[in-house]
View 1 (cartoon, helix red, strand yellow):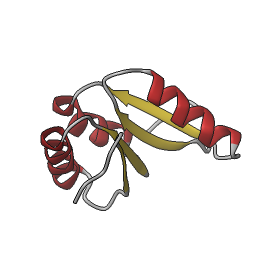
View 2 (cartoon, rainbow, N blue to C red):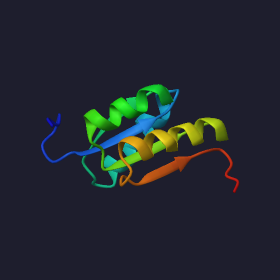
View 3 (cartoon, helix red, strand yellow):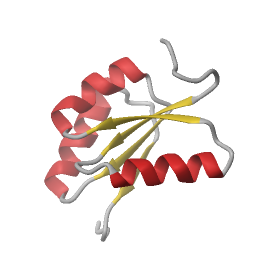
Length: 93
């Protein structure tokens, strides 16, 4: 795997919009964590991104439970040991 920056931590961000990706990227960098974010716009491309980017962390910026379940299923199939942070306006059980 080739990283854009030497030592950058590969991160995958699932989000329909670019703003969350930029916020995550800048927040982690400002905290001193060198990251390389791969933006994935839809759940259907998530498995491919996890296979190619080999992330150490995944952010799921999802709007509903159906999208969350599909994203977690893809994560389980392609990168089951990678930690996930779920980003939502509201969280329920």
